[in-house]
Image 1 (cartoon, one colour):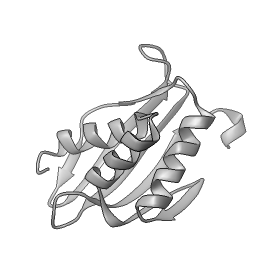
Image 2 (cartoon, helix red, strand yellow):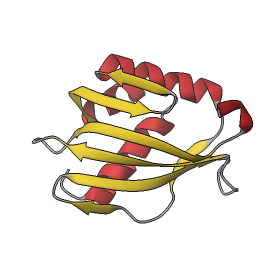
Image 3 (cartoon, helix red, strand yellow):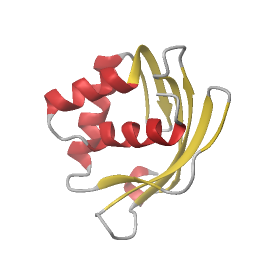
Length: 123
């Protein structure tokens, strides 16, 4: 996973996966076992906790999809990217950006997330 655009596509695919077994497999494939994920609403570590968080988000926003919000900016093992969450092909409901660090094996080790636009219920 050396191509940052590919990493982000796989990252978003993990967040979009609704089947629990396939989502767990995607989390294990994309993230290191000791992954640390922090955003304004959550802070989790490890595959099981991240999988649980993604499942909770999928439950809170059924039918909405994560899509890239622009190009990936990357250097060394760091990347930042904007994402959108909304109905497919429509204006996003939530907009944010993440800064992620890759581990030595090319999987994501750390994610620091930020929310730029959200419904009032998330503020």
